[in-house]
Amino acid sequence: MSAAQWRRAMNRQTSMPVRPRPASAMQPTVVAADPYPDSAAPRWLKYLWQTLHARHVFTLAFVLLFPFVASPFITFQVASQALVLGLIALSLTFLGGYGGMVSLAQMTVAGIAGYGIAVLGTSSSAEISLGWPWWVAVPFAILIATLCSTLIGWLSVRTEGIYTIMITLAIGVAFYYLVLQNYSIFNGFQGLRELKPPTLFGLNWRDPLPFYFLCLGCALVGYFVVKWVVRAPFGVALQGIRDNPRRMEALGYHVVAHRVAAYAFAGVLAAVGGILLAWYNALMTPGSVGTGWLINILVIAVLGGMRHPIGAFIGAILFVLLQTFAIDLIDRERFNLVIGGVFLAIVLLSPDGLLGLWAKLRARFGPNQTMTSPTPRRQQ
Image 1 (cartoon, rainbow, N blue to C red):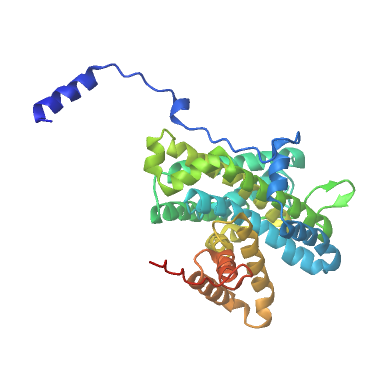
Image 2: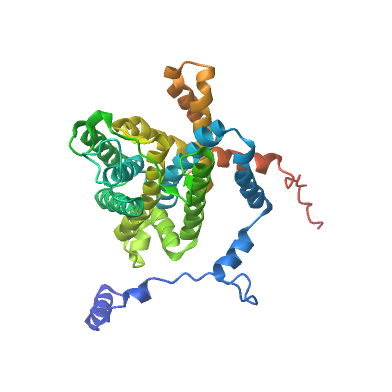
């Protein structure tokens, strides 16, 4: 075809009217096949039964029976703290593992919720706290933290890599100095104390056993919701945006809107963890949202594995165990050295954390590993 013929063909095509395609036609709908079409059970129950394995039943039985055989110190100081930190780290795991966005502001969002429940509810500073009932203060604290997380996402999703990390770190440091230097709302460096969960059904929910089951219930709900979201059309699209945002945008997906929505969802998880953290410590101080804790949440998420929701809780268990018992072997001031050494060793051995290391060991030494014999040459 000559150049003149090509130009005439292109002019003929551009002269034809082009009807805009609706947005619904540009975005393919992801519909999962029904695993048990002959059953009348709800779809979520069918998928739960399909994905349920013996290890899940064993793990659930273990976490339910654990507080009845462990001491109150282990139940409250280790297990409950690991569940709270794991829930906050789960929000980062969702953003980083499934959205490709590493945020250092997740502890900041949790701190906003913690300070929200302290200011809106009751604390030792009666002149600052508003004294709202818990069933009003808790939803408002979660709402405020979620809106702040959405704003953080709106500011940071237009960047990638180190720029996203620096923006979220700057926001976290700014919030730290805000609560440190503000005495009229946050009571400065002294913070707000005597933050207690409500007495409901005749139980003191800060006792080791009730507080453990409260944290366990929130952690299980957060874990299963994340597992459901990443398999939903929104989660599938978010993973596609993580892998190739330009291609997803060409397919008709709004990349910025999906990323901001991911920040909002992660903000809900971090907000619930922040309220539990405030009740666990019975106080909120600037030290709770300092730079050290911003980094610790990232360490917890990476230790367990960023691409696995359960990895956040595994990393939290390892972190809390080292934090609690490492002082028996070394000085308290050298705890960060131990955490840094363990973090460096795991990352060097497996970039996907402990779960990635476990998968490598199973692939190499597992029972399904069989020796393959060379393919015999076909006789001529």
